Length: 400
Image 1: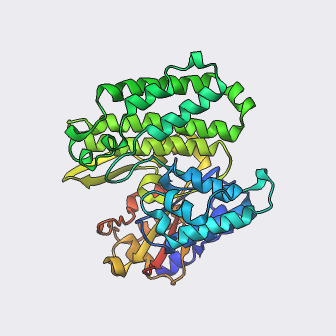
Image 2: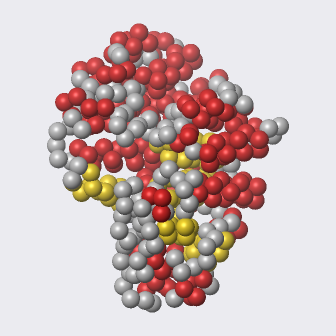
Image 3: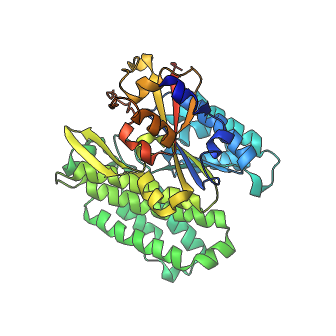
């Protein structure tokens, strides 16, 4: 079995990845089974560099706050700010502390130095402005959207003034109370003020859409795209806050689905820009429904990848990453009757396999079960192989 799989395994390089497809996909996604380890991020960085230099990719998107990510994009494209500032404020989920993410930002800035605007690489976060413990206030997104419109559209067309927005938003801490994640009664999301803000966000987004030709002409396509991002994020945040106040049994499943829906909207917008490499957890990028247990309940929702794949079709591609061991986090040698256990007999270097060829090789053996999950680590489900384009295997993942 190991020899059969070794025959279909390749080094993880752009040429091998592109060999999986008839033409370069507009959106190439690379998953990982866990977060907070740098080895797969360094593999991502090396692959992105090759895709930029050989295949014309110009954007990388990661599982981080889409609004904060604008600071990183400004830095890598224009040099605005400092590296320390963007690592501290431009990433969510603690990702700015990753040495590999710092290396990525430095490489992008160096690559762009002296290049024409049209040839620069771009950075994007595609997650919502959300953390595990809270959701952000919609203040930044709503006020930025309102300011863009107020600067370039007849004020009489705006549905409200900046002062009205400020009054309705109130103090940010009433939106970001961590207690609201588990206690619906602590959420501000279904207050009278929040309800009025949802209507105003809808009206501001509609006005932005209606004035598209004018706004692009008097600003730029980049500025307009940024306003669209603020409109999506504002509406998404207000919807998320509203459902945080829900008391039904489907509350958590709804919230996880809303997060991936926000991700999908941002990814579809990035796909309009050109070829993009996306990096996130396998569960967000897979073509299947996502699932997990939270609060003792099984949750299921459509992943961002499944939504984007339904829209982009063959222009969406998914490479899933599997680990053999990650001993510093308790992931020891995988059992031989699991997918990871079969792959563990391969050589040490990271390897790429065509998922359909791997599925055919695995089917020739006894039934293969899914390995046990650990906290924060999700092994690949062998049943998903038919809906994956390629599998990247890292045999022994070191502590950073």
